[in-house]
Length: 459
Ligand SMILES: Nc1ncnc2c1ncn2[C@@H]1O[C@H](COP(=O)(O)OP(=O)(O)OP(=O)(O)O)[C@@H](O)[C@H]1O
Image (cartoon, rainbow, N blue to C red):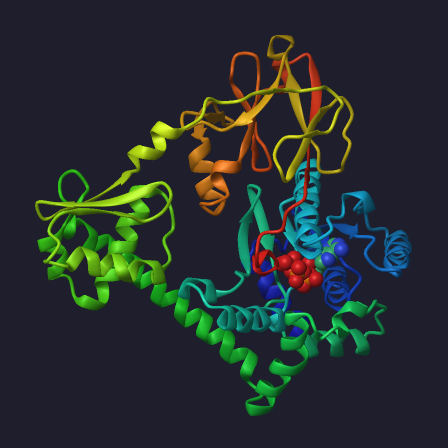
């Protein structure tokens, strides 16, 4: 049948159509992920990757325990290895439960990936999920690039996160489930139309599908076109940028005005991103663009955020850190680690170093006697982590790479040893250390209590 054939093509594109590969199948027991699991099980044995089922019992609904029990029986009957974890009720935050559940889920998938040495995590996102997210982002506003949507395949903890059902409509998956007599559980919260996604799912997408039955395909086609345009724009920028930059990587106003007006804002955006390592939204850039071109104001300074300012003089624009800020930096306060104790290290983060893992997502770390005492402190500009292979990466760079919002970056904390070496950028990355060189393993754990606005939209 068409679904099975196309599905196989998706797996082949991700290079997973082989018994030599191992995949983690994220199964929620909803119809989509039960179809994903069944399609994988139906693959011919000589092509089927090794399957490991992963499930998080979020303990958010009364039927959660029933779903977990069903999946346990299902996996027993089909001889499928199952990794199941409970999200402890006392770890549920008061607000932002959805985002926190998602964070816990992906942390768990990452742990399973690491401990099993699997090649990929597979989720059952489909074309309706893609269109819903697209419409939500359209309504919310933001950068055009965000409308490109979820990728079928993206990097995930050094491996892949693959969404092989992305080309398929939910209705196609449901038909498959009914035809093949699958058992699944409906999420009762899906009926709650006060939730934005559900309102779009139940009201907007069906209406647009009445307007044109090919609506889902059209969303996918627009996203592909947009991706192609963004790629072309990025190439264009690599050609334009050198024409406007001085030897010291500042911006020459005379050269900048020679650029076609429509390209000036993207050029400014690319230049600023290269110089600051931050992403700047287009709507913020418009007034700065006017300021740069304003001949009535040949010199001056413009604060563009809490850290950076544009400086205009002698026909040159440069971007520099605020001097005032640097002077105002307070001396770094350190807090000693109490082994086997949760410690509130910031207003929103509680972390600890333990001899036994207190949560499934705790990260093992090989510790040496000379490391003690350990301390928590805010990160400093020179802080860096050791990478496997001996290289180093600046904490600043890690926060940028992980797309931590600019406002959140100063709040990040590090765990340091007695020599001041950074062992953990809390919540983001653990420094590499060869286990052979350590006497003991400790476990680094974090309880998060925050939700970032719109975090449930992140893919
Ligand atoms: N409790 C769970 N256990 C295992 N996998 C899950 C669980 N919940 C969701 N998934 C996986 O994630 C996919 C998407 O689920 P869902 O649409 O509910 O998540 P989302 O929060 O909207 O998406 P995302 O996880 O990308 O934010 C599911 O099809 C399934 O593969």
